[in-house]
Amino acid sequence: MNIGWISQALPYLPSRGGFRLYGGNLIRQLSRRHQIHLVTLLIEDDAEHLDWAPQYCASVQTIAASPYRRLLAPLSALSAHFWGRPLQHRLSMRQALKEHATNWDVIHVEGGYAGGIVPADLPIAKVLSLHDSWTLRCSEMLKCARSRREKLYYKLLSYDEPRYERLVYPRFERCTVVADPDAQAVRKTVPDARVDLIPYGTDTDYFHPVAVEKEPATLVFHSHLGYTPNIDAALEFANDIFPLVRQRVPEARLHLIGASPDAKVLALATRPGIKISANVPDLRPAVCSGQIYVCAIRHGTGLKSKMLEAMAMRMPIVGYPGAIVGLTGVPGKHYLVAQNPQEFAAHVVGLLQHPEHAQQLARAGRELVETEYSWESRARAYEDLYQTVMKERELSGAKAASGSNRA
Image (cartoon, rainbow, N blue to C red):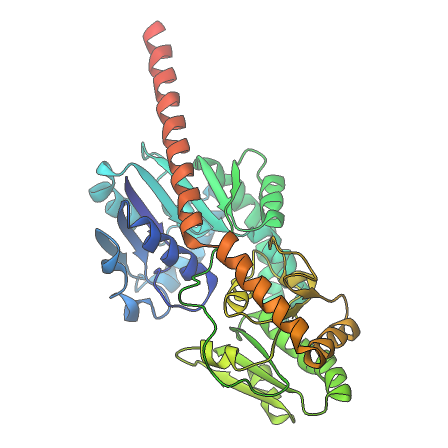
């Protein structure tokens, strides 16, 4: 197949954040059997990573941010709200697709914003990969937002986003998400959207146990430490759980690893037993040097790719229910789940005191991601979906032509 791949951020590997990882890993797998034609917006530091995509894509076209984006932002937001068509990037995207889309068999769109700037009148089957429900995300973020500005942003977005979704999502033959709560939320918000569930995968060749010396009684957590649910998780563990662990294991240490740590996270390093490793080029040795992986996430959407990565690195895991959303594993077999700080601390202490149990969990977690979460299986799921929507569009066109001829 010739697959047109439209993304609102440059996919590349390795990268921080699940959005780019999802697209990058799918492209790498699909490119083994198909031609991928990438059209991508460039945001943040994307321009520094343009050497990755040409290895896997038959063509790459980039769309940079407009120098007038700040002036256009209010009008673009109004256009998105009333018609589901943001002004920014729209003309550039239409021009790019007019030039390149004529030979594509199917269009795969990464991100809801990108969905709004893709022309709806293209006579090609289209799949919109959402990852998660932004309506649900707004609700979750309001539970953990720490600043007035962030609370106001998500409060306003919670009124605007459902309307945008109802305008945009029905333009696509299918919308995909990575976890069942997100699928339910999209179906509730947009009843006429057709939603499929295709979870994250993980690269078990890249994420594997690294041969490093284990640091005694060390607990680790890795994530983007500037993202609110992750900040909330780091602070909750440090403030509410870690002191309980240290009461029973005074030598216990907490090692937080990740990109762009928030100031509140950085401040934790002044406390006894807490270490921060920021923006490390390769997080695997740091994660694997710990004894136990701790994920105190309570809020957020989608399946947590950090959990898959930790299991792939054969780390025993303790987490809150919010950390295991979407996972097919069995609590007690693949990871331990806690409902409150006291239970969380008890699980951690138990694993520190019984390393054989920790090893059992770690082995089971690695086996789970090897059998259930390969990126190849995710690529095959999308191939099946592409074939389905292409056939549906073909049948729909044939019926329309037949009706026209009868008329």
